[in-house]
Length: 204
Ligand code: GDP
Ligand code: MG
Image 1 (cartoon, rainbow, N blue to C red):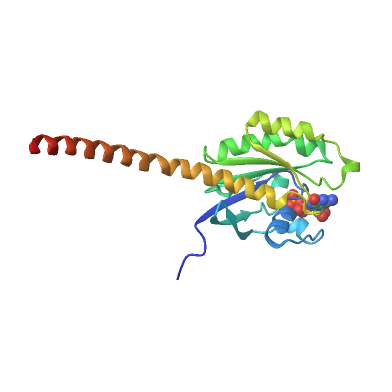
Image 2: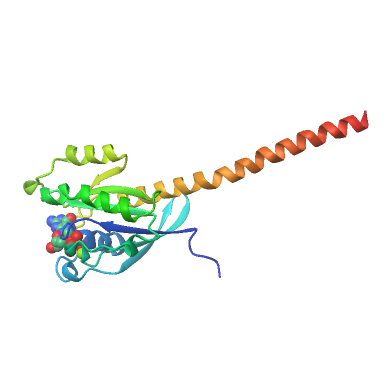
């Protein structure tokens, strides 16, 4: 049976409890928003296959299942992650300040080449905003990562941000695979040139 996707990426979401991680995953995977029962329990993971630059990319998106409340996110959670989505709530300053701690946790636990992205969620409640958009943008810029303001509730920038992260990962991985093929090209070119030199000597 033909494979239904070209790449499989494990992504995970981290950030303080209550910022909307579970809701973002559900909005992305099921285009749905449920504000009540999932809040406390969380989910394991959800999958969705999307088109990224003409490739079928299956995203396996993991949720923390609430461990973040006890700061007990283990190395096991980070294992194999190719992309990490850091989430804060634009109406909660503390959740933004804590992004620095989550960054530290990534550095200590995730693999060095992991792609990161910062999301300021709940942008639908502008009236309660505590973190200016520029402040989020600046933090992301300082870390050299992408930034979006999102709303899981109103479905703003959810698909766009996941697609952008998947595209970053795809580009990173294709750069890696370019190198050996480039080397192969150079070697072939050298062999062909040398052979043709020998051949023309023999003929002459
Ligand atoms: P988690 O602890 O980070 O997984 O957060 P949840 O996904 O459980 O969401 C926490 C609370 O925030 C819930 O009551 C959600 O209904 C609410 N919430 C999540 N995303 C949004 C959003 O984009 N806008 C608004 N207004 N509320 C949200
Ligand atoms: Mg949750």
